[in-house]
Length: 260
Length: 260
Image (cartoon, rainbow over all chains, first blue to last red; front, side):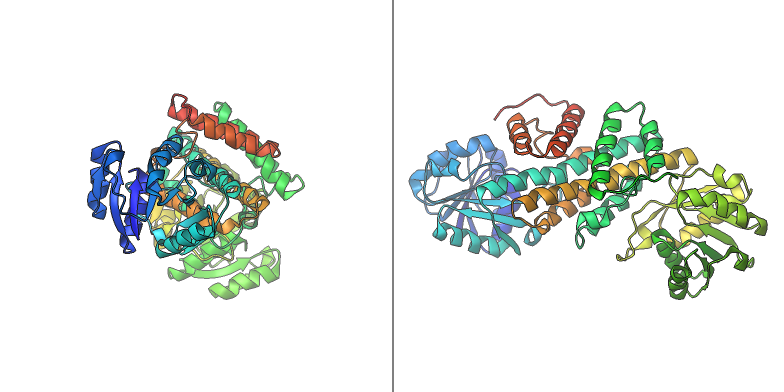
C-alpha cells in the first residue's frame, strides 16, 4: 500500500517504520518542521515535506499522527484528494474526520512509544474504526500486516481505552517515581525496585490483576498500613494517595480487618 | 551450607528452591501444617516437620519466612541452638530477633512471589542485614550464591523499601484492575492493555520514571483531563484517584496549563 505520514512524533515514527518493514511504500512524510520530517523520511525512504501544497496525491492512505487539536484542520486540507484519511488518536472521535470526508477511519495503537526505545510492533494492539465496511476492511488488512493484535473499536470504546491507559500506564509510572523519591530520601537507588516493577507487570500478562494483588491492603494488615502512613507524615500527598488506594484495595477485596 | 526453612509460603518456597539449586542442603522444612511442609520439603529434598521439638540442630542457619507477628515467638524457640537466625520480612526490624539471640540477621528479597509463576531468582534484589560483621559476611556470601543483586540495607532503610514496594508494586497492580473494570464496562477485554502495562514497566528498566512520564497530566492537557473526569462521573473513587494522581504529576512537572 502507498502510505503518506502526516506528523513526525513518536507514534508517527514507530508506525512509519512498521509500515515500511511490512513492505509498504511510504510516499511522503509531512511535518511543519522540515528537519523532523527529513529525519523520519530518511529512515523510511520517503520524501520529506513541510507544506501541504507539496502533497503527492498518488497515495492510498493519509495517516494523521499529530496533536489532537490539529487533526481537524489537516483533514480539511487533505480531503480534496479523496483518499482514505485516518487519525491515530485515542481521545478523538471519528466524527472529527467525518466533517470533511466520508473516507475516514481510525488507526489507534494502544501503546506507549518513546523515540529512544525499540519495540516489537507486532505486539502492539491496533484499534481500528472505519466510516463504512469498505474502509474498515482496508484498515483491518493494513493493520494485520504490522500487528498480531487487531481490534475493532468504536469511538465510545476508544475513549474508554484511552482513559484506561492512563490508569494502566501513566499513573503506575508516576507511582514508580514516588517510590524512587522515597528510596532516594534514605540513600537508596531506584535500581533496587526495577525487578519488582517488571515482575508486577509480567504477572498480569497471564493473570488478572485481582488474582495477583499482594501487599498490606489486600491482607487488611492494619498494623503495617498504620506504620506506613506514619512514615509518610512529611509527605502529605503520598499519605493521601496511600490511604485512598489502600481503601479501594480493601473495599474490592472485602477483607476483615486483621491485627498483627 | 546447611539451611533450615521455617515456613512454607511463597517466599519460603522460592527461597528454598534457590538455595537448593545453588548447591546448599535444605535440612528441614517446618510448617504448622504438615501437608504444606511436606510439599515444599519434597521439592527440595528435605525432612518435613510440624513441631519445633523435631528441629535438627545440625544446621548452619534458620531462615524464618512466616507472617510478621510469628517471627518473635519462633526466634525465641530456635535461639537455644545457637545458630544464625534470619527473617525475610521487609516490615520487621532486626531488633525483634536481637531480643532472643546475638546471631541474628535479615535476608529480605525485594520481589513479589507467586506459587504459580516461575522467576529467575538471580535477578531478585536480596537485602542483607547482620547483627555483627561476621553474620553480615556469612549472609552476604550466602546471598551471592543465589542472586546477582545483593545489597546491605539497615532496618530503617528496609522499612522504607517495604513502603516503596507498595507504591511500585501493590498500587500499580490495583490500577491495572481499575483499568480492567473500565474496559469491561464497555465490553472490552483486559488483554488489550497487557502490552502497554509490560512496556511501561520495561521503559523504567533503563530510564528513571520521571524521564518517561507520558499522558495528559504531564502535558497539562486540561481538555483531555476534563473529558476523562467527566467519563468517571459514576465512579467517584476512580474520579478522586484520577484527580489526585494527575495533580501530583502536574506538580512534579511544573507545566503550564494548555488548552486544546
